[in-house]
Length: 41
Image (cartoon, rainbow, N blue to C red; front, top):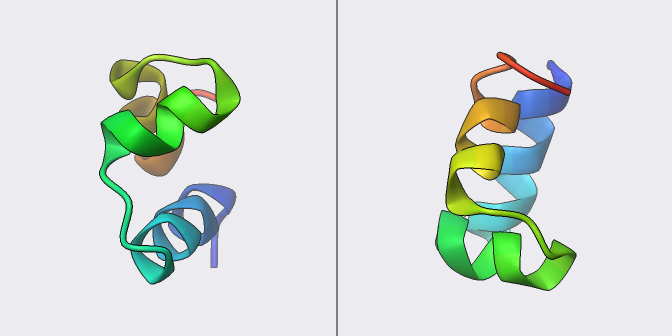
């Protein structure tokens, strides 16, 4: 399991959208998307 897959799994387990998850960490929805696709760490 990659880091991106783990991030997506955690987010989904908590029932959060990428936007809501990003707000928790002070980053954009686009950053979460890049993390989940392993385009950026």
